[in-house]
Image (cartoon, rainbow, N blue to C red; front, side):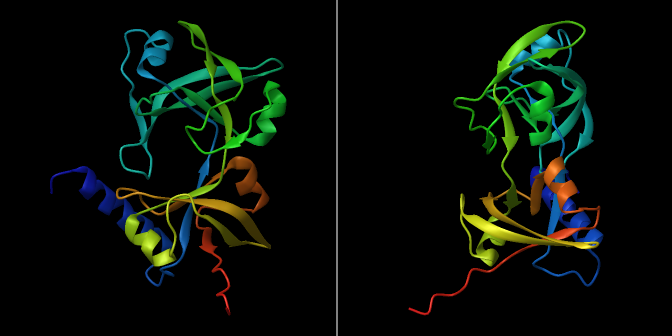
Length: 219
């Protein structure tokens, strides 16, 4: 079978379903814990890693996205995060995504935003052995759910809708409100939480989430 983007999406979907088990709940949403990471433009990548190509370290669940072998130090006014992973492919604007707890270490007041919404965000320095640059675009990623168009139809949501999500983990039940639906044709079903949120909900490898249905209007 030719490994096209469509076939890769099907393979990833099949793997997720197998991880959930043969008697899986069709409404169960796998949870991906998003650790701090960096997205770079081609120009910034070339400055930080002169003469290099972005090398794949690990395939991520969303088709075409991957963790690269390259890392940078993220330097703020009061502290440094060492060896933060660069994710590929390259973007049209560089950005750094961190957990809320890490904003205190770095000394930056990063807002909670969806990826790419960078207006008014603070700046940090990125450093490798070859270069150091300044990047404006530090955010704490707003929790969201990637899903296919078919998933969106099944859940009754559209791009940008806010939903409440319930997570039942060992010894803990957590409800996260204001989770943003992000359907796209090639997306694989996966809820993204940062490390702080996942830790608070006691998320483990097989923990899943469920969208809480909105009450039907009686009028």
